[in-house]
Length: 455
Image 1: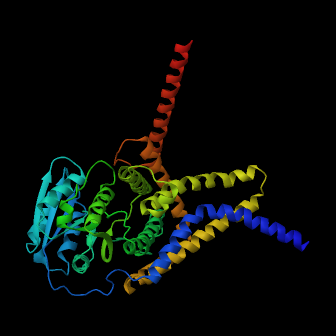
Image 2: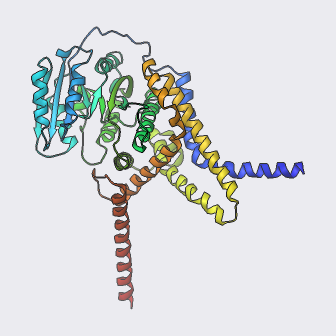
Image 3: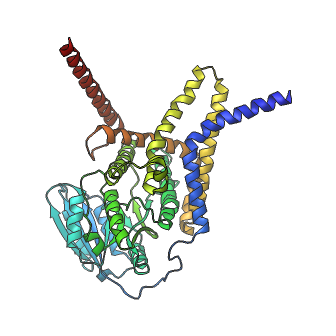
């Protein structure tokens, strides 16, 4: 009887172990690599100087498009920097604003005459166009891009200059992005989603980007807050409109140029910027679709030919594509196959146990990741994070929701023309379905016509 029980238990573990490992394999292995690397390696220039012997001019470019609601707060955060204010040049690069953004700029300029402010304007809307006009107007040795709905920590610019001055190989870097959300005060659905966002960004930048900094594999210089050596940036193609992810496109362009001079792209974890949380599920969907399709569009441009499996595993871009694209469809198959097993005769309690097991695995993964990021945070921020520790139990569901949104990005990249206008998941999905229907109609019409000619 014991042997029969052991045999059934072993069969259960083997069968369901395979199902559980399918969606977890990439996530767990990636997390383990991150943790081990961060524990066994010291970040480049960790023991760097804490004081500057030379203070260069820094240009901060703020792209403006209907940014009246957030522009003043962004500019105020720049004016409050610990870096000498007279060495900071701020260029507000307007691209087709229809609101009173310029009035907000003038009001701030009147109240803060100590800051070197400049306004450039182009008629056509387009973030890339605005950024490029601001970059060409900049005078600083270092150029920093800050979105108009982003605000900087008081020490952000100083930390950027410290990193560049202490590391001649650093040609460009992204800062650390945090979600500016009061924690633990409200508990509506969107508030809980925002708390998940807070932890997601914390883990992504304090673990993921720190690992990428160690391995010189930063995939994207965040459009919200990134810094460049001026001479290197002006030798690139700057920001382009050929994809929906102009910041990733520029990152790949600069990486190619940096290799010729022994340079690298990094992440400055001590330079912190804050962004607004998403205000709706539709906005979250729009954001994740754009990220995913931008990733695919850019990598497709910079891969002359699709590498084999082994080469893809060696190349960091290939690994990201395997994780975010190839494995996405494996997870998709897993999602539908598990419920289908019920109709093949598997007991419902057994399926529920498998689903609970999967949830527990992801909860432990997110919990450990959160703990590592929590330990690396400032003591004051830790106190805030303690208020939402319970979100660890929600993160697996948030991760699953984001996964489906990113699948939408993959589908849109394959079926729709480039567009930033992605707001509502229902509208977007219906558009994708209509696109497929039109394609099927075209195939049927072509096939019918072909058959008619043969007759």
